[in-house]
Image 1: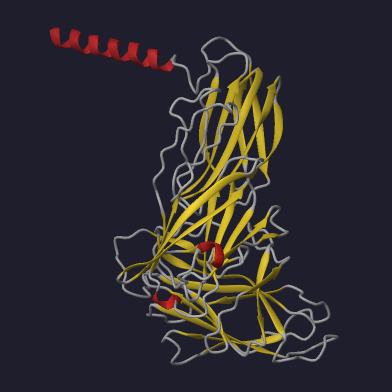
Image 2: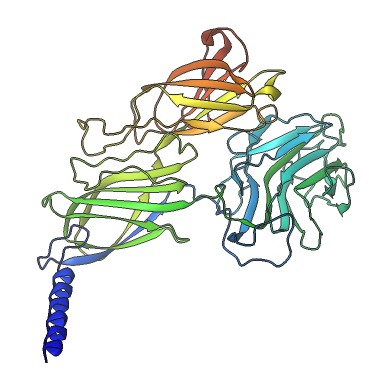
Length: 488
């Protein structure tokens, strides 16, 4: 009997606890009987990055030495958009691997032009060009890749450029080059720089190697109405170069692809609707919101690190920031007012919350001895508090950007500097430490001014022992498609 009473007592306690939890406020919405409406937000204006690895089951055929206990996904092993005017891939499945692009026995291409060649979720921007290329070689490490499935890219050329090419591959570091496709005639030869898209199935190739090389040999091809082919100066334009396959899920992929939302009721301070949602293909967010007027902030984050927010945000205490080390983060956002009075749909145009900083090296020789570059910010960490201009800086960030790469092949560093929406120019400064295998080679101080949604370029010799002001120039692009130059 006592046992039965104990069971009944425990059951009663459980019911009371359950009911008390069920009556708690959710997302800061009070428990009064308020009229609530469905509001659908449709987002635009931002770049939704291609997912490097899309999720797939393991394949039974291995390429190289792999760990059977690893999680594998299928998607882009490498992808180059060239939109940042460099040879760094937008996507690589493992950040520690260093691919390369060269032509004519080791020359490094460094010319980029405007491009209309869009690809999936990547907007058209820039393309890589080769003048007088006899052969182009792209080397891609594929260590630990389980399977390589396809190769693709877009090509175009002006009147005197090539209209055809031969395509070969190597799985023995260039000792031999079996043919992948001998004839690849352009489809439209009458329009200069017309986009020609190529894709090749690689699943029948028995790799069993740690590197995959691709060799492209331009040819005159059928010319149509185009000019005579000039093999010494004819230009070939390349864009959207990509390799797909199945590989371990690693630090090369973006672990975070989220949208954060904050809605602060302007009349009721206790009504705060906040949360986070995974980005989806429709870029739509549906929320149930009580009637009222709100200050709102939406932020998207595509990166490997969470953003910084206050634990319990209010209108006065709200801010957002990003760690300096999370230097590849694509962060877009919107702030404004919203009035909810009925079921409604809102179009939200997001804008960049960051600017791009590029350090270009003009050294003719010596970069092969550089093993590592570390960048530290000397200015106060940036944060964005859209609803309180007087908020004291809440950010303590002592993180650094560390880059290990083939600097003789990719003669630059590119990172995103988080700012929020700052229409006023702000000062910034960095300390750059250059290492070789024995230690620090040189320390460089860089400084300039910047506002949001700009491109800033520091250009000079990395290894010169002269003062910064005599070795680096500064280039500012305020609208991402123009350039303002300031020389020291």
